[in-house]
Image (cartoon, rainbow over all chains, first blue to last red; front, top):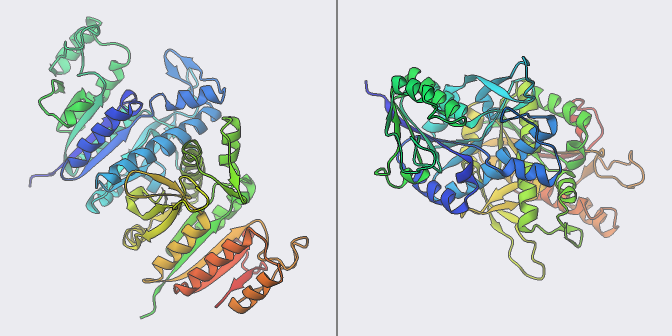
Length: 260
Length: 260
């Protein structure tokens, strides 16, 4: 029996921070028929609030360390302002959105990242996606909208990478759905030359991925994103794309398609 | 046919701000069997954040005016930090909580309060509670946890009184459930003498309510709360109580019971 199609999209920080681009994306997203899920980052909102509150944001090797104070800021901005703004805009476009953290309905369980050389603070790694609960929401015509916050089931909220959440949700839902996963951001896809926005690499398979890493074509931020893409493909997600947010309104837009 | 029992509790701001009292309340709440709903205010969290951000909080006749900047703060604190902290604590107590604003799953529709003499800003008055959606959550063993934020269905979030949300939810759910509504806060109930915390008035009916108003026994903050209580009773809510948060752990605690 053919599985039902499920569309999972993740929108990145620079789209969140650009009101016009966000509204355009959400209008396109709301028009997608059938079950769908949105995952969003927080963009610069957390850093901006941290700066205003004079809370120090510590970075180690380009990664944010989530102190207790930083976690509060992440929860306020990601789960509060950003998530609810998106939900109310989607409702305006007749998309029955439901904003969630992983704590809500215990839908994404994580564990605090263990301290090895670096203590990342209140950062969570996904342990389990409760696909039954998410399916129940979808069956009710509800569109789950996940922010980058999960919990450990013991009362602790955890800051969790949105790309990883999207990959883990897409993978978990692949048991029952034919899942397409779209990472949407401000670029057109993976670029051959970061200086040339039109140098989109249209197809990347595992072999090409290794070649690109060896040739240092893939930059720091793109590495974990691509890893999340291949993780999803290896866990039976049908299609994975990296695209500009405009792709949702015009599927002819050049983009990157991943395959194993 | 006897309707199924539904427990609706609202916790006030001073409980939210008292970590020990909040945890004790949530532990008691999680132990209540059968379907239940929690509604919470935001306490001083919004004012504290506004002060830190140097955002002016304008009050007219003791009521907060919700500017666009204030609304962002309300959404960050109520829907973000306070709501998700409560949800993750309830999950830790094996209560399958789902944090919501009225925008989520379009569950509470409101309209921006019209400007007459005073412009309250982004303040919403409840228009409709989507009892079907809330019942669906309850049927799935989910405990909805509502903060004091709704939406107008047109993309605008609105700051909405938590006491009113609790009353409106309790009323809407009374079509299908035998609803008990508890307003839990830091006092023991309605006090005969505000200076004497033990002077609880144990029963107030509509006649007594009028007498208390005429005798100026009921203070400013208690007036709208009692009005919400009587609104709920008039809309078929079975039982309405005003009690200390400890009541949830010890039903022998003295409290106020309302009746028509």
